[in-house]
Length: 586
Image (cartoon, rainbow, N blue to C red):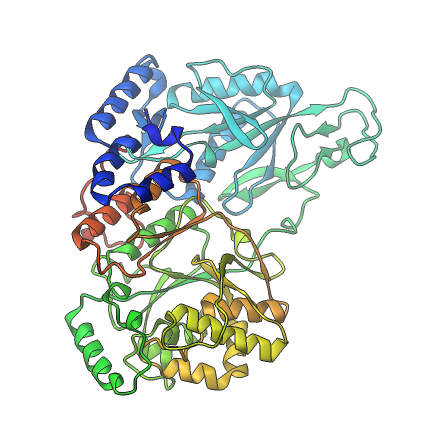
């Protein structure tokens, strides 16, 4: 029982929410989503009842939990990193096959991608028997794969793996000790049974000859459709740190695979810090006489920290553990929970970032962002995130940058307004208009769209060129202590368009959700997101929440983030982690 929300289209649901008074929806919303305490208890009871029929010896250490409309036997874990989970699921399959002497080939094991293992269909019965023999007492699932998606799952040892399925997905369901589901089949290992020809056949999928003993794939993959007998020689190569058989003829990564490092840069501020607030008040008093400061640039909600950074870094650990070094840019502030000794983390203060450039202290994100390429040691390719941006499910490097070095950017459907920037514009709109004018003068083209508020894929060389090409505008932005209509927005907009017109960036697509946390329909959208976890990236932005009950808003946000990212990341201090509340059941 997942609530009535699953039965009503989201577009219809959102219209109803907007029409209903806030007070009514706060009462009815949890009922619609099935998140009231009685509904949660009922789901847990139903889950235990359904799964109690599975013998204890087969369940192993798994616990029964309910998530949405599904019941799971889930293994409790203290950490969840997609890179580690993928490796563990390959181990389940490969170790079982090796234990029974079954020949197999690892076809694909690229960064943060589901591992693909091939076995001849002649060994399919032995492979299924090996899985049953070695995984029966471990609470491991199998599922049929069709069209790349898992269908009809069962528990190995409790149900018999059907003999007519030519592609299986093997996985464990994982959860927190408190019963919050972390992952299911999406990170499983795919095992395919490839047809092996008994005699010469022709033509093959692309007109090739197919001599006897050729393996033919049952479904498409990134590499090839068939393997001829003289191409089946394997050699052991390290996969997730363990030697596994791969085709000897494949001596280089896939053409699409990114092999260069990609770093991460965060910018963060603690707006509740008394020293920081004093510096801001003094700077604002001095700047007020100059005029042209947009009221939204002074909005306290722009600087409010609701611990989003903690959860954004958890999402980074969980779903993008392949990134290189992480740089956190702050105004001489460090979150109390952050482990600054982490080997993959460097905290960069504003004085270190700006050097002799700009004017400090600064409270202008556009100014701070204009200096990111000056971070010492930063890789050529990096992802830039605000602390309100989160990875929502496992992502791969190729979603942000192509293997040839081209960065990907993600256009929004929202358009830039016509006319010149003015003090009446929102700062983001004014900066967009200035970017448009610069691109027009430099390249003779008009840009029309804003960019999605996601993790921005950037290149240091592009940012350096922008500083050199638009010296005056870049200098003025760096010097502005508060946002104004004279700013340019570099990493979130200008860098993408400049990269595009200089042949270093191209538009891409990504599954993305944007939610203004002050909007009435946001709780509904977050409840749906928590159930489905069906977006690559999502942003929980705060445009202006001055009219919203801050306690209600903070509670809503904290409950959601703690449910979505319940386990501490490697970036959190151990003594701080020990004091966190236990994650509750989902």
